[in-house]
Every structure is written in C-alpha cells, then in structure tokens.
Image 1: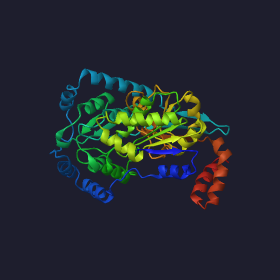
Image 2: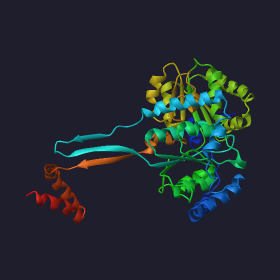
Image 3: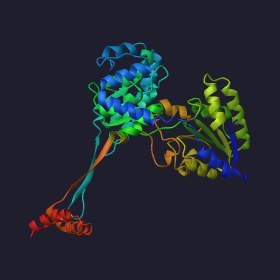
Image 4: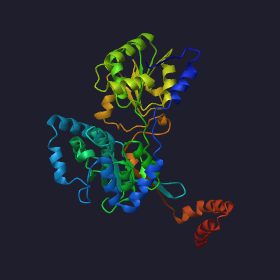
Length: 432
C-alpha cells in the first residue's frame, strides 16, 4: 500500500519530510569503472569502443559498420506500420511547432552614453543524443531531444543507440530520420558517451550531449561535463496529481500508474481535498494494477514510493506541490488556471482532467525531458535553449568611452589590475 498522509495529523510534517527525503534510487557506484572506460576510449579510440561493444552488447563491429548506413536505415524504416508512422509524424510535427516558438530574438540598442549593446544567439555546432537501445527503447525521446536541436540550428546531430545482439527498434530510426539526425552509431554505454565527448578515429566529437541512460551513462555524463555540455542527470520518473472530488477516480488512478509503470523507483503522488476521492482512487489503482502488463513494476513503485495526501483546501495543496517540485504536475480541479498560478515549481503542468500526462509524453508539443528529484525548483525541461549560446555584444564610440571609461579605470585600480586601467587610459589620452 502507498503512504497515506493527512495535513491535519500531528505527525504530518515528519511524515512529509520523510516522503521528500526518501531515496528512490539505489544506483551502484560505477564512477571508477566509468572513469576507466572513458580513459580507454580516449587512449584507443575506435578499438576500445568496438571491444566494449562486443563485450557488453554482444555485437561485433568494425570502424566501417559502427554507423548505420542509409540503406540499413531505409530498410528498417520500411518495416514500420503506416499507423505507427502516422502517429510518429504527428508527434514530430507538434513537437517541432512548439519548439519553433521558443527561439529567442537577438537584441541591439544604443544607450544614453552612445554605447551600442546587445546580444545574439547561436547554436552549438554539434550535439550528441544518447538513446537507450534494444526493442524497449523510446522513439518519442528521440523526437524530444533531436527536434529542439535541429530547430536551434545545430549543424551536426549524432545519435548513439546500443543494439544488443544487433537488435534495434525501427521506430527509433524513423524518429531520427523525421527529426533530421545526421549520423546514427550502434554503440552504447559509457563508451558511447566518451566517444561523443572526446571523439575517435570514426566518430567526431560533439559540443553537447543529451538523452537518458542507465547508471553507467549517467556517471559518464557527469565525468565528461566541462569537456562538453550535458542536459541533466535525470532520476526516476514522478507525477503529482492534485484532484478535487469532481473527477473520475479511474482516470486519476490511470494517470498515477502511467508513471509507476516506468520503473520500480518511479513515484506517483495524489493530493486531494476529499477523503472520498482519496479512497476511491486508491481502490481504482488496486483494480487497474491487476490489468497491467507491467503490474509487477507499477505495483512495486506504488507500494514503495506512492503516497496519497489529504489537505484542507487547494491553497494547502499548492504549498505542498511547491515543496515537492514534481517533474509532472496534473491539476484535475475545477479551476486549474488559478491553481497553476500558485504552483511555482514543476517541470510541466497539465491543466484540467482532459489533459493526462501521457499526452505530454508523446504528442502534446512541450518537451518530456524534465527535471526530477525536486530539481524543478531551479531548472527547466529540455528546450531549444539547451542547444543555443548567448553572446553579448558591445561597441564603444569615443564619446561613450569618454563618458564611462574613467569609472572603469577607477575600478581597475581598486582591484590592482594595472593593465586593465591602462588599456582604458591609453584610449582616453588619445582623445585629448
């Protein structure tokens, strides 16, 4: 059974703190192993990647077969059913349309002293996308990572997807094709991250790496950060549903289970101002669990990390939501817009009972790569901004330098940086 909390209980605060601090991930300490893999790839390049791929993925490669050829991609894509293709094309279209609107504008203006100031935006030159492999991989994640990169203007987008035993999901290759991916390599694990970051004889290095992966991939991303940019280190999925009594408890139960079925470490939370709704949803979850193919996974998640919290009103619900800072926040209430205005920390908000989180995973348009583990307090989901850099621009005229230069010289002197001050003074003296 999930945890049951009530804000009117004398023990609520202690119980809620325990819920917030519960460790949901027991990832092995693989940092040392990963460091060795990265060092090996840096030293031996293709040879290391090929050797590690044979060891971990049971796949023998050569430098010539590391990447999928155009013919291989075309043959795999041809096996996709028309219905699956249409669904993926709709998702790609909606995701692209949403992210196009995120593109920021350059700016330039002249201030009262005559200085011209501003900024410009430009994409990273190359980005690498890691895609978990095998037949259980997620083509939707390919779209969510690759489309923003291409909308941002990334010139070269490389995908690394492990193919254990040579297997690959054709939908992953179709998603990459729809998103405009330039290269697809059949490699995975920490060795793929190292190859993307440092390059090999065959694989050119990238500037930024995004995409989910296992503990080895996450550790590798941590270790190469600084050499390249990364998106985030994501934890297990999570959802918070805030629901009033005027809802179908079966709908709410399914929304909670939609995240629980991801992973035994996923977390599904319900906050409601109705004890009747709390009971009805709990009963509906129990019924629906028996029908799920992934009931063992979803059941473990709900049992170990699920919680039902009853509150006195929706203001209290919003306050708790802000402390949780969930990855996904569903507002199944009479006035979701008003409640959303009070919810300041969430990766993504889904407004109203007709907007299940699952729509956001596939075809809604906003990105489904979102901050987890309360990091929505200070970070955002993936967007075109992750593939852009802002460069500031400044131009001084003689009059502008005459107006503000002496202050710069004064501050340089106060910091004992003589050459700084002299570089300004030399120009000011030339104006006399």
